[in-house]
Image (cartoon, rainbow, N blue to C red):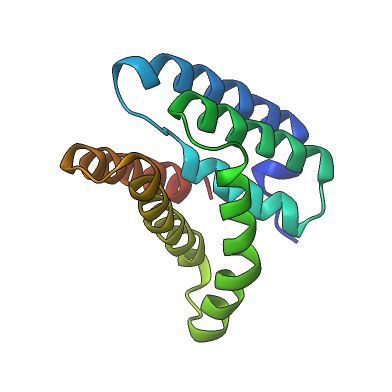
Length: 146
């Protein structure tokens, strides 16, 4: 059995503080929704392992991201849960990518998030560029850490 960073609740708490700090600072100045893909990866892992305290902390982290971006509350948590329940089992059935599964799941999360964000806030090129920048940052972080 391989160990993951999220087996230790300390790393989930650390992720919460880092994402909260970055979203409060960068939502005003730089990039919105930073590290949402990493939180989504943590959500998937702690939900599979049934670490419910860590799951509650990832939901609170999504809540911070939503409140800093003006999104409806629990929209990212509900989106993550629906992706985990409906889309991920079909993708695991169709593809067997091994270690690349998490990267594919992050891409799917951001694509559906882009659709949700476009419905709520409107569609613009700057939003697409920011989402692609976030995808790049999150794929690098997920690819290196996991």
